[in-house]
Length: 198
Image 1 (cartoon, rainbow, N blue to C red):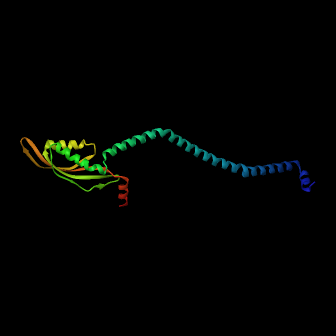
Image 2: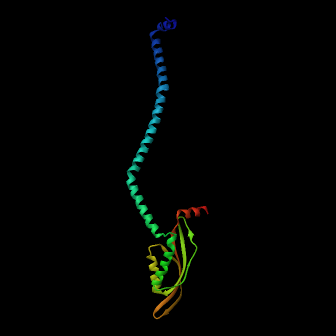
Image 3: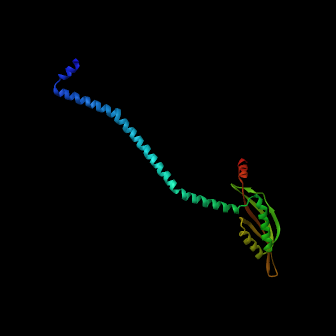
């Protein structure tokens, strides 16, 4: 037998127990620091990832549950956009719209003294189409003209209204009105790209 082992076997019982306890403590510490602690750290990281994935799954489920609602909202917004676009004519419809404004004014009993389109003013996705207008007629016919313009299917804003040459004749008040009629038109994608390049 090996002399070292024989020497250990001849030790008193208390020293043998102390040596065994020391060996067991050393092995326990080695197992704890070498195996258990790294696994605990890995387990902690995996639990953190699992929690993150579970949160992500819950968020995706919430979005999936809201998908029908979001689709309905999208369809409603698309309808609203289509409706809004009917109120913004494209380039081809502007002359007919301006002709419609003059016919509304004439049918209300007014005379057009001036109808001068001004240069368009491009905005983000639309352009303003301003027109200087000067009409004469009775106060009532001018008011009817403004009301009829407000009822047009397209958006037309009347601003900068000024009254001149107010006269009384035959129990009626005639007036000359100068104003700025502004309508709007939708810019197509090519026009908005060209504007951004400028």
